[in-house]
Length: 172
Image (cartoon, rainbow, N blue to C red):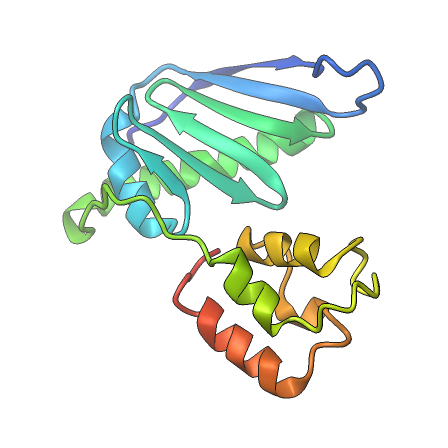
C-alpha cells in the first residue's frame, strides 16, 4: 500500500458569495512515482513531468495530485471530500500494486478540438442544451462535461460523426 494516511484542510474561495469549499489533503507518503501510472490508468487528463502532477476532472470537480498533496477545487462539504479522497486513495493504491503490469505514461493527453466539434453542431444557439451558445457547448464537450446527446437539434449523421471523433479521446 503506497498511500496510507492524509490530513485534510478546507477553505472558502475568495468570493464571499461562494457556497462551496476547497479541500487540500496533505499526504503522509510521497505518491510522485505513481503519477505516470495513474496517467495511463486514468486516461485523458493533464500530466506534468516537473514537478510531477496529474490534474483530472471527476464529477465536475477539478482535482490535482502532487507528490505529497491532493487539491480539490469545489466540494460542497467534508463528506463529499472524504468520498473523493477515498476513491483516489483506492485508485492510487490499486495502480501502485499493479504497476508492473502498467506501462507508465509521461504524455499529456490530447483534448478534442473545439472547432472540429463546433463544425458538427447546428450553430443555431438555440439554448435547448442549457448553454448560451453552440461555442460554449462545444467547449464543454471538449472538456468531457457534455455529450453530443445533450444537443436536441443535432442531426443523427452529425451525432454519429461527433461520437466517432470523440472515441479517440477515451476516458474524457
